[in-house]
Structures are given as C-alpha cells and as structure tokens.
Amino acid sequence: MTATWGISATILAPARDILAFAAYHLEAGAHRLYLYLDAPCAPAMPHLQAHPKVRVTVCDQAHWDKVNGGRPAKHQLRQTLNATHAYNRRPEVDWLIHMDVDEFVVSDRPVTDHLTHIGTDMPILRIRPMEQLSGDGTAFKAFIPPGRDRERIVRALYPQYGDYVKGGFLSHLAGKAFVRTGMAGVKIKIHNAFQDGEELKGADHLPGLDLAHCHAKTWDDWHAAYRYRLEKGSYRAELGPNRPRDKGGISMHELFAAIEAEDGTPGLRAFFDEVCADTPALRAKLDEKGLLRHINLDLDATLFTHFPNWTD
Image 1 (tube, rainbow, N blue to C red):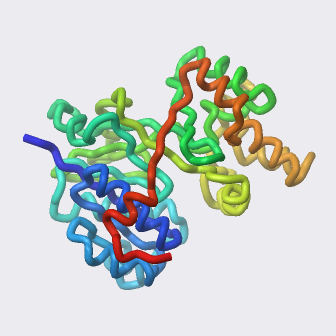
Image 2 (image 1 turned 180 degrees about the vertical axis):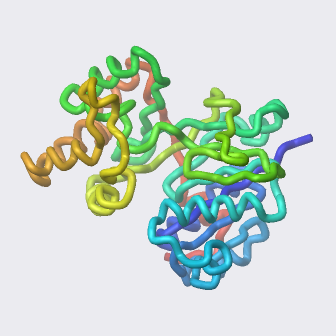
Image 3 (image 1 turned 135 degrees about the vertical axis):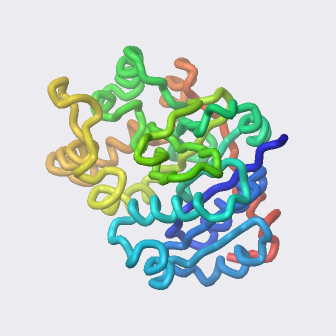
C-alpha cells in the first residue's frame, strides 16, 4: 500500500511565502497540509481555504483557549502544541512531519516511495537539513554526519569561525521527523516526537531525502531576523554550546555577542560572508569535500500552479 504524508506548520510570514511553502509541498506530493497561522493573513486565506488538500487554522484566542487554555507566550511552545494538535486530529495521512515555512522537503523520487518502504517497527523517519547559501538560492551546504572528521572539515571550510559553528550550520542539525500516525499518547516537539514521555526512535537520514533549510536567503534577510533570533529564536541564550564547555565550546548567542562587542555590524557581516555567502571560493571548498548541493526549489512556478489566482 502506498503511504500518504502531510505537513503541520505554525506560520508567521507574508502571504506569498505561505502560499509558496504550501504549493511546493503540494507539488511534492503532500496529501494534507495543516497550516496554523500565528496571526491572520487575509491575502492568503481564500487561496488556502479553497484548496482541497489544505486545512488552515487561524490561531486566534478561541483556538488557544480550546487547545491550551490560553495563548503561550513563546512561539516554540505554540509550534509544539499545534503540531501535536494536528497529529491527534482524525488521521488523513499515514505520516506527518512538522516543519517551518523556510524548510522544504527535497527528494530524489516521490516522497511516498521512501515512506512506503519504512519498516512497520519504525515509528519515525528523521530527515537531516542542508542549509542554503546566500545567493541565487540554488546552492546548499550538505549535512556533515557526526564523527571525529566533522570538526576538521568545518574548520577547513570556515577558517575564522569554524571552531564556533556546529556542523558548519547557523541553524539546527537535528532536522525534522516524519511521524507515523495513529499512535496513542504522542506529543510532537520541534525536532522530535514522544510517546508517553519516551522519545521515539526510528530511521535516520535516508539517502535522497533531505530538508532544504533557507535560513539566510540574503544578508538583509538574515540581519532583519537576527535580533529576534538572538533574543527569542535559534540563537537565544538558553541554547547550549557547539561543543562541551570544557573543550572550548560556546553558544551561538555568546559568539554573536562577542562579535558585536568587538566589531559591531561590520563584524556580523564578516561572519556572514564567511559562513553564509554564496561565493565561488566556498562553493569550490564544499564541492571538493562532496558537500555542495544544487537544488532549484522553483517556488514561483509551483505557487502559480497550485494557486493560479494569486497576485502579489
């Protein structure tokens, strides 16, 4: 039997980004999209509501009163509550994955082909990220599996900052997980799933199935999101260091604070140019180590395929 799959996502983004995310995954074969809008988005709503494979929820006070007895202050908790809500509704798919609006499933064949062949003893399938370089959007740095070679490779790629950037990525290495539906007692977290308090384990990092993460599309895009990420997001102070502290590890929050204290915005730009910018030199180094990926997400084409009446 062919496995069906779907996505849950809590989204705060412009209408075009919401529709592009939805359209891309509809084109990729998603059978259901459970989209939770963290704030109303009137331009996107009629297009989402009209699509038969999309289930859209505006996260207003009534929603949060029903789901949680009130709206959580932290967006991370809102994400996990909505992902769990989507999982525990009447199953319309065999597998469900929680994702962000800047993440895209990339597969070398229909996603369902990968999922259909996962053993029934495997409750989850983890897909690992590749992180977009800041340029024309078609170049990505691949995930480097953990091991003793990872730090050496990262230092060679980023001679100034490689010691401080885990795996060479600004954002997460954990990826996201497809979770088999129909299990009782399941709670979905941002990167993991738990059943009755125990983390679910399963298949990990199948060849040909990846998560394209567009974390820093341009310098302006990254810098505009930087302060929020530093205070409340993926660079916040509560997150751990890149390696144990007794081995010199520091967190991304500490790294950026040090760069700003010493060199201000020009220092942040120098960091960005080394680690994120799509330059011939970085492409060559990534390619030499087998870590360069060429992916054209072609978001404009799929947007107008699935939402033909959209206008900017």
